[in-house]
Amino acid sequence: MPMDPSQWIDVTTEMNHYSLDHFVIPTHYEKDVSSILIPHGVIMDRVNKLARLIVEDTTGPLVVCCILKGGHQYFADLVNAVKKLTKDGKTIPLSLEFIRVKSYKNDQSEGVTMSITDEECNEFRGKNLLIVEDIIDTGATMVQLLKKLQDFEPKSVKVTSLLVKKTPKSNGYTPDYVGFSIPDEFVVGYALDYNEYFRDLDHICVISDHGKKAYAV
Image (cartoon, rainbow, N blue to C red; front, side, top):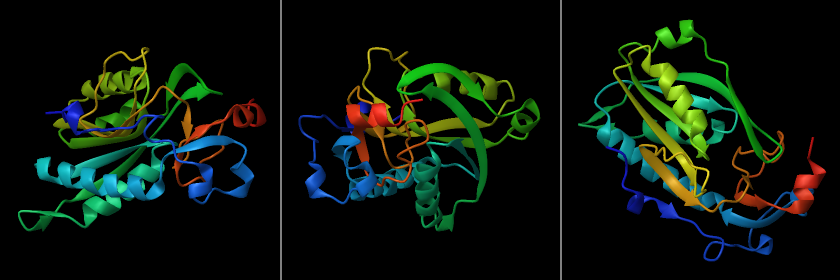
């Protein structure tokens, strides 16, 4: 069963609004983010907790599927954490797959495009899949992907997303494992981007108006 939302860490701009002076920010982004929403150390501790929950629920080998590009940092850290854990005294066999998805231009969600082919999906038949996503915004991208995957009859499909955005645009989709629920702000860092920028920022931050203008296309 999916995590109860009470188990998510609820992040708000009122309670979790760290000054840029409190942490290290790359100098080339100092004007481009307005605040730090989730510091890198907090992210890493939460990833370790999610890894434990996933291993506890796992019933066999996992095919861990990374949603590119934004999910790659969470994916890498999560896989490293899972590899260190055991269930009934045994480690979990993992295989890794990558799916490229694009749905944003500037700060607006556009049509969803996916790189995965039917031939690639056919390899998932009868296997336990764990989809690793950086953020669930409206939910449209994940619903579309899951619908495609189910046609190829995997044994199970579970989804973990580091972030879930609290937005009225949501279609109500809820992942199985969630790190943080965040305000309806455009966030960057920890591999989340704005037109391919900010992936090299460790913390999850709110982009500033200056940043949106500086990196708009």
